[in-house]
Amino acid sequence: MDKFLVRTERYQALMIEAIDRLGLARIDAGGGQCAAELAGTVIAAVDTQTSLGR
Image 1 (cartoon, helix red, strand yellow):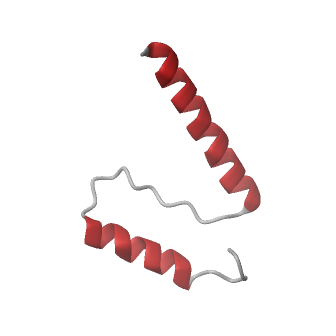
Image 2 (tube, rainbow, N blue to C red):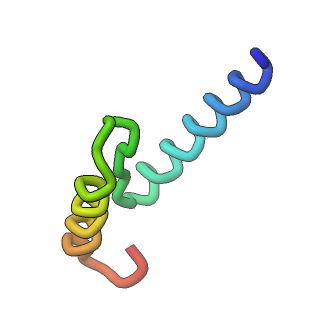
């Protein structure tokens, strides 16, 4: 279990680094929001996109 958690944390760190490096929007879904709040956050992120595919 410990090895799995270490791999999972490393994967998550690599994904966050890649997202930030590419300038993509990152949404934290671990804050305990309800589905409607999370959907609103996603829609707001999409609305603020400035280029195609971003």
